[in-house]
Length: 343
Image (tube, rainbow, N blue to C red; front, side, top):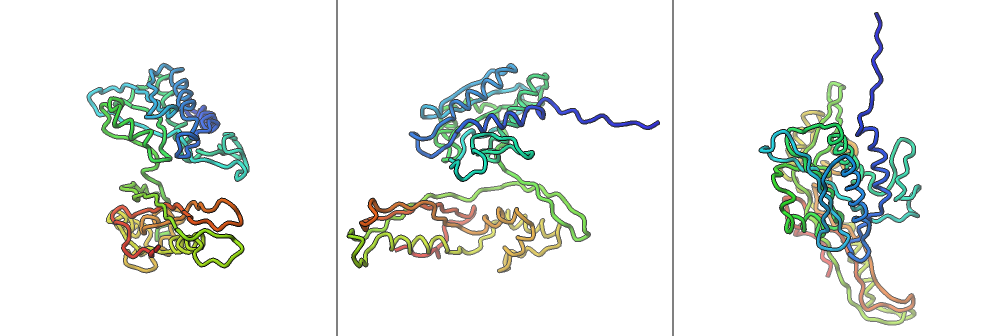
């Protein structure tokens, strides 16, 4: 007798997660790094609280060091209170977005073509929405996890966490009582690679460290003057030359131990030769696809100019000019000693 399988019935979490992510994106939580212009975290955290309270959670709202820097915590008791708690954490802020650069409004949360669109759809209101959906399902359906789960929704990740995780650890350690492990943004990627026998294998990479980060500012000083004259001490020209050297400089390869282990494992799976001493290492990495860009970024120090500031009138040569840039340092290396001179 023939039988037919029943269609998959989505869980409560699956049924509501798209709407939750879309609604999260509609909160403009742009973090400019400036207290005066950063916005939206308080309202977003309060909305998250309402979603959790609706199914019975007790929530704790905390502002971390400045008005409006909203954080939200909730705990779901587990079957074994003596076992270390697991924290699931995500940040509510996003980097700013210019609507003119988008095909849909970045804070619309539009659901089109099978995707949720907007600023934060990947970083990281997608995961925040999944956290809320799972938390709501567990509470509403009476699911008791093996150990306590702590759900944390945090402010200020995009500008370093000064008014978010750092403040909370220093001033509210009680919120982390009993937590022995935590799962947050990224930390690991899955990667499908081809094998020599023609099959494919899924690899799960685990993050062991991150590049060190430093924001730097360079000031070039010249002599002010009128734009119509010949001028040999133009601060903008001096600065442009230095910025070009920084932006185009290639730092030497540095292969941390954990990356070397990854290259060995990837070579065993794919049959490719990821020789850490090869000058064509990055070319071989490219055969892994999109993940090569991430792995490749761990192999060198980097310096990327991001902002320029000079002048106050079109026909006046300014006396000073400044750029800002982001420098990324290898997890195991100090800034390279052969960086280009900016004098």
